[in-house]
Length: 441
Ligand SMILES: *[C@@H]1O[C@H](CO)[C@@H](O)[C@H](O)[C@H]1NC(C)=O
Ligand SMILES: *[C@@H]1O[C@H](CO)[C@@H](O)[C@H](O)[C@H]1NC(C)=O
Image (tube, rainbow, N blue to C red; front, side, top):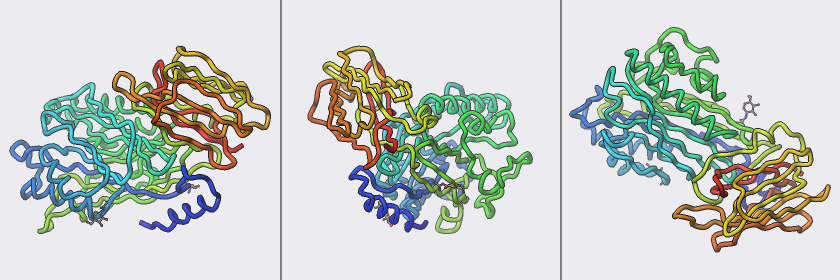
């Protein structure tokens, strides 16, 4: 894929002097979803010829060779080590175990992430196949594509089969992911990619739930089907020679008020993943999608500080409906740690996150005074990382602090000409994880 737009975006960011924290304001990345057929050979041949360990090694070499930015694998059970031995991606999840123990879900990426979570299904069905044999489910990670550029990426492996018990379980699986997105990805850009075991013609599944409930677009429907949802089943050959046919492996996405995201390319990558003699490596066609992204000119965000605990919150949804937001009052609470952060906009909208402990500290901002810089310090409480301290500095040099400083601190400055107007992160009765939302002054 072309790298030219990426580098010109860096050049623009440097010329604008937008600060060390900002790299590019636009770019592109590609993803791959592949069911790697890694059940033990004695249980399941997957109708793939050859030795499964050798095939897993070839899959890993192909991952390294083609260098996809984020790869979600499913059914990565008993030949996992052979894939990782020949792959060379910098960031990779640790396996959750072989068949019977693990979920078979792993991610290999050129980007780092935060908040990695594995979630098991609430419902499974052995109506056909043995879906309850191993705890499948889905994973979430907030992938850091660039500084202040995060996309919540979900890997998924839903219940298999077409008996009515299977479809009931799969419908519950998809509903579980959709509800999870509504809670844990509020306000965020999202990409769901994995093995849904669903087709649009399996209507009892309601695979359309990601569009109807979460506002996600199916990249295949968009790019290969002209936006029209199929009503007639079209099964792919493997390797597939056309992108027009439907597989159960799917890619859904949305941007947010910080980040525009577009799928620009969709392809079944099957012909890249073959054995030395041309045989297939998996019974699933792997899928790639290329995404272009661009940061908004009205809202952006910082990186995060603190630990992956507490409940997700975001002021973005409220902020995206405000024109020219500006903080007029900062309200923090702290003691031995940081209890809460809050701010009130000039239109009276108030944001507050965290708990009610500690001592309150407030700072009123003048009509032409903006909150431009924040320092956060983190530390350990009961073996978990939290934010212990905040220091806000305004464009007039006024300061407000709360909590207790530690030696593990980071400074978050709004880009030149921008200001801090809100928060995203995870909280409980204290501030576990925190990032700042920026808007132009
Ligand atoms: C991984 O290996 C490929 C060659 O197969 C190479 O082109 C690529 O630069 C390597 N990537 C990393 C992150 O080392
Ligand atoms: C996405 O596509 C739309 C319509 O073509 C375009 O207006 C927008 O700028 C694109 N955004 C990105 C991030 O490429």
